[in-house]
Length: 314
Image (cartoon, rainbow, N blue to C red; front, top):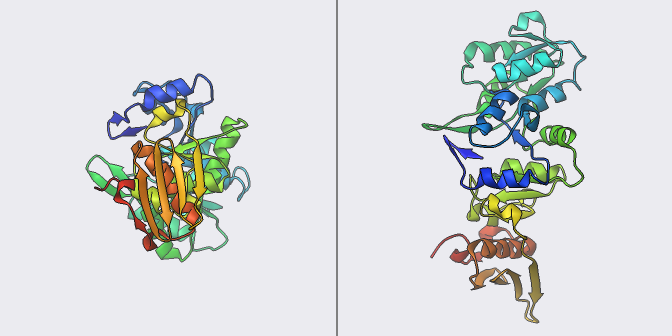
């Protein structure tokens, strides 16, 4: 939806239009902010969003936590207000000290976390019977000045101390998708994201058709090389594609084994390990055709001779 201080081009208008005919919800791995904070941030870009339209990894984490310990249990929270408030709202008693013998530990990102908080989590988790929930395992986060350590990095610090790993609620794990489906309902969900390893893999694992939009992290090279679990159902240049008919994919094969895939005005051929563009068409259709023919070949990308036209080369 946004990059830094600015909305992604066409995102606000496109999702506003989509909301006229479908329930639009927002899912985020960011555990440092409350749903109301996320909603207000999105509203500042011109969207109509309420806290009920937002599912955070904190909410998914607490939903997961409720399956592991009794209601009202004392829980050590390693995180900020975005996590602590959700834990309290769910009826748990919050502590920041292992000396209170917490029934579980839940860990989420906060820029204010330091050694003291991580140490308390480690002390509590020395007891192997104490469940440990992480809101997400994002190794890095983009900030104004560049790329910074994310929650996965902080979780890893505790892991090194206690010798075990948490159960994880956020993307690409199933709990956050289950929480979203429970919240938003609908018979035909569609999940949109810009990362193959979290958004698309998670949606695929949850059995939800997925859209990769090329306005964020992953681009054509990553799409062509995507493993089976991270391949999107649909690929869009930007969110304007939500209101346009998706082109049909046409396949054919010659007697010599050469295979062809046509999408829109683009045709890509593959014979053996060689992949070539025959008809350029639009760049997005070229990518759709190239991805289809490579994915369906069953061959690893590093063993193929791929036409640079498919990923923006000359």
